[in-house]
Image (cartoon, rainbow, N blue to C red; front, side):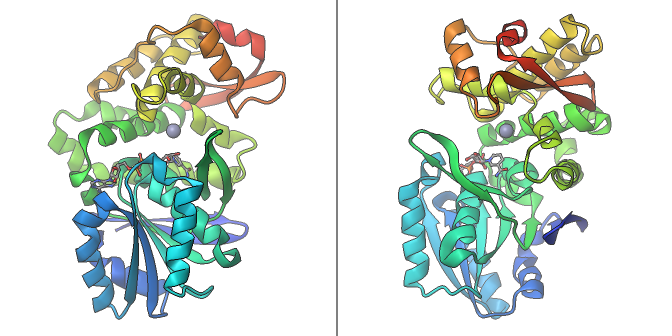
Length: 353
Ligand code: NAD
Ligand code: ZN
């Protein structure tokens, strides 16, 4: 079993990673929580595949589990679904001393975390992330949120779980498109913080070889996020490095109405194109953009900037929540595994798109 300790001033907890861990979820939870009642929030897809097995496992460990199942997809990160989850938990007479478990991808994790942070002024919760994106990114770091009509993640908080339990084997049932979506963020970690991870990803010849090493890959990604979050929990400085490729990526996602490109695809395009520009300006070592491109292609991700109206792109970037008044912070890669923040005036952004 691989184990990481998250050590923040107000909260310490473990991330456990092991193939097949799902067969021990109940006993791992029991080490940290001994009441009978336990409240699981999941989505319909994950429930269909893992619900019954998890319920049995919890019962055999003496728990009395109550499931709340939401529709799969981003639309469940809404105020309406949030309210229905509050109601469902209150109907089952949840109290402040109970435990909530998020079993699912990033949508379930963000929604459940926000429920846990706010219902009855805060209830303990645990993360059992089941998508690649959730296992390497969204379940670590304490950001929880729901969306508004006006935009994504506008209502949220920082609220950490008591544990993160990761079974990489659960990714075997994940649809391919979600798998590749998460791969963009894995590649991102390599670009910004770990040449070793980047080279590992380059070296795998077969899918089998990749999956043999998936627990190590997940461990490395979580460890990078752990270090970044411990240094800058509230995202005012170096945590921004995690947004490499995201400014352009968000613009691509947005300009195509969040339909044509997934988040990961947007990030992939963003990482390559910003690096192409920074390399041309001498701010990145020669050849880095090409290495990123090859790795993106290998993991079936796009790299080419689609045809977009420049005004629309600018608007999308200008309104990006990561930009402060007259300036914008770019995340650039110096060489593979090394990145830095560069603050520029907003009008200079044209040099980078
Ligand atoms: P998701 O939760 O919608 O999951 C993707 C799809 O995979 C869903 O249809 C889900 O039902 C299905 N699924 C999940 N696990 C499965 C499994 N093991 N087998 C079969 N199907 C499975 O999306 P996501 O990509 O996991 O997460 C996206 C969300 O994460 C976005 O809302 C984003 O804002 C958020 N996010 C949050 C953070 C953070 O720090 N909190 C970071 C990055 C992204
Ligand atoms: Zn992202």
